[in-house]
Amino acid sequence: MSHISIIGTGAMAQAIAAVAGRGGHTVTLLGKDDLDVTLGDVVVLAVPYPAVTQVLAARADSLAGRIVVDITNPLNFETFDSLTVAADGSATAEIAAALPQSRVLKAFNTNFAATLASGTVGDLPTTVLIAGDDADAKSTLAGIVASGGLKAVDAGSLQRARELEAIGFLQITLAAGEKVSWTGGFGVAA
Image (cartoon, rainbow, N blue to C red; front, side, top):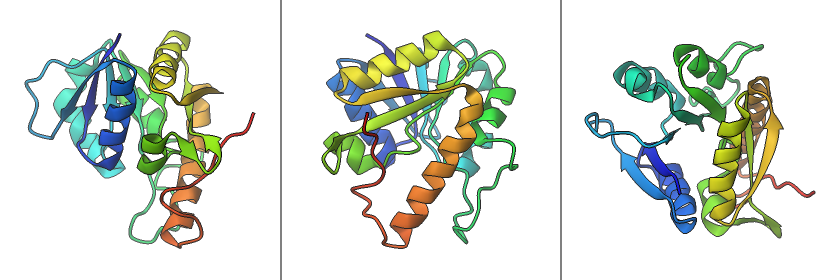
């Protein structure tokens, strides 16, 4: 079993903690002031994208050697009209560049907290898409997801984080515009 540290305490952090807990993993939720806590093998960045820089500045050394999971969607929350990273980049690529000694993954950003909690998106099981360059790290996270009762799909290399962020952006803007429910979203049928 893994020890998972989740930096953040909001709805997504709690939903991911519940998934990992159902799988028998040890989970610690950390707020911004919990800087002296020893981090687990897997660290989930469950904070808004604008807070990532501050989190990395405070914790970069302690993240070395760990699996770091970025769940952010770097969208302009004032206008909901664009992503705030370069067209050929991603928030996850920026995080990976800032943490060269960590194994950085993108996951959970295409899920809403409600679908993680319920385990379904409509009639489909909730699927967590995982992108990254480290096969062992992806396998570890996929195992955590599966042990919590959800499906995990390897979405490819870290370069695919850009597409995952675009999917997350689209899903959020549709929900904010009341075109889809915050308890629904996109599902994956295989």
